[in-house]
Structure formats: structure tokens, C-alpha cells
Image (cartoon, rainbow, N blue to C red):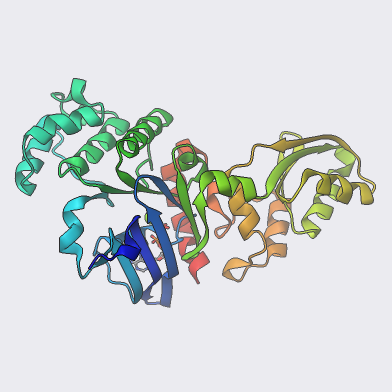
Length: 362
Ligand SMILES: Nc1ncnc2c1ncn2[C@@H]1O[C@H](COP(=O)(O)OP(=O)(O)O)[C@@H](O)[C@H]1O
Ligand SMILES: [Mg+2]
């Protein structure tokens, strides 16, 4: 039963764990995850590919059974009490299928009839996702952003209080991403709770009120975006004489900072304080010609939190060597969001999966 202590939380999990059996043995999908998603607002569920986001969402929706732990939606334990809350939840987990030759209106009307939603909802949801003007055009003529907004419209037919979208902007172009983002923000502004997962931290940062950041199936940070950015370590851009770049990189990395070259300068992540970099390099006789604190973002928070981990059996030293050699692409277990541009979402996802998306979980 829903009890007073759970009031105020749309989603709550404790010690949620899920392992998968495979020919290679057991792999961990989610490792003792504690989530708390407040009622109202957009909650970003963020983490690199393979960090357990989809597994968690599937457990919440009763599609996968956890090995251990508990999950509640609006105070109701799931999957046991799912029937009591399922009517209040709309979700997109896999790409929904629509009839390509039918219009958005026709597709939604069929769906409304199938799930017993009043047909009057069709107009309302078309309006909500800003498809009302194009509702009689065939689905196959829609842009990717419009298709995804139709998918969101379908989840709204039941007028749910909680919406769960698993990587809804994957594969969309920047315009589509913006449309979907605005749609999610609009739903939250109406008082709904939106849980949106993404492996691109920066993409969700702009619309999320609160976030949970996961890595390797565990929660590594959570809270309001504002508080995480306030507490997080910074990134700075430094410029040194070209002859000094190697020495500077070695010195900074030896101190545990993450360094990447960028347009003739060095970007240093995980910096506790810009003055720290000045002093560290000064002590090595490297003088800065420029030091620019970069706007703190969730990616740098994430990097700051994970930089000392040595995932997948590969040492950080090894990763650094690879980076210095300038190997193409991110190492499989490196934090993917830091390097994946928004427009490349789908391609990057595949690339990482083909590498070893589950490398981090082992
Ligand atoms: N059906 C499955 N069988 C085996 N392993 C799985 C399965 N689904 C997910 N995994 C593994 O569980 C981990 C988490 O995956 P997933 O939940 O899809 O992460 P995310 O959604 O964050 O990318 C990964 O290591 C992945 O390879
Ligand atoms: Mg996923």
C-alpha cells in the first residue's frame, strides 16, 4: 500500500539489482540502485551506455524482474501493485510502431480505441505535442522529431501523471532534439513527472530539474541540477607554450586530472579550483598564457566523480597512454557522454555497444 513516507516521490527504488546470465557468465545490469524521483518536474536519468538505465526502466514497468531490492511508483510496490498504478504511467521504452500510411490522427484514434481512452483525448494530445497542424498527413512523411512527438502523444492518451522516456532523443537531429525537449519540459510545466534517460548528459541538463547519474549500474550522484553544478569540480582551458604541452599534460595527469587537447589548448577536467592548475604547472616551470574556467556542466561533474575509477580491468595509465597516442574514439569504458555530440547520438550508441558496452559492468 502507499504509505505516508512515500508521498512526494513518483519513483523510489532501494537496492535494486539485476544480473543477466549469458554464455560468458553473469553480467550485472543494475547493482544496488537507490533512486528517488520527486513528484513533478523533469528528472534526468543519466549515465553512459551500458550503465543500467534501460534495465532499471524495464524493472519499473514490470518488463524485467529484479533479483533483489524494491521499487515503488507513487508509493505502490512494483511489480506486485503495478495494476494499481499502471493507468497513471505512460512510457516509451522501445520505438513504438505506427502505421506508415496512416496519419497521426488515425494512428492515435486506433490506439485510443485499443486502450479504452476517450477519442476526445486524441485532439488534446495532438495539441500537447504540437502536431495539431500536421495531424492528417501520413506518418511516413513526418520528420524524426515529429515521429517521436507522436510516440509521446501516444503515451499521453491515458493522461498519465508519470511519463518515462528511455533515450527519447536518440537518433534525432538537433531540431528534433529541441522539439522533444520542449515537449517534455511542457509536460512537466503542466505538473506531470517526466523521467527521461540519456547517455548525453548535456542534452538533458537544460530541461532537468533534478537528476540521477549512474555508472556501471550504481548511482554516483543525484540531486538538483543547480546543486550538482555548484558542488562539482570544474573544467578549465589552459594554454601553454607548444614545447610545454607534453610536460603540462604529464604533470596534470600524474595528479589525477583528465586532460584533453582542444584547438591548440588543453582542457583539464576535474579541477577543484582553477588556482590549483596554475600552482601545479608553475611548480614544474610551465607558465600559462591563458587559463579560462569553463562553464561547469554535468559532464564535468560526471568526469570529476569517475576519474579515479579503473573500470573494466584497464588501468588509467593504460587509458592515458592510449589518449596520448591519439587513438581514435573513446575507450569503451570511458564516460561516453563527455565526447558524444548530440547529433551523433544514435551512431555513437551503436559504436559503443559494438565495442564493449557492458565492459563497465564486468
Ligand atoms: N537482455 C540482456 N542480456 C544480457 N545482458 C544485458 C541485457 N540487457 C542489458 N544487459 C547488460 O546490462 C548492462 C546494462 O544495460 P542497459 O540497462 O541496457 O544500460 P543502458 O540503458 O544504461 O545503456 C549492460 O552491461 C548490458 O550489456
Ligand atoms: Mg538504454
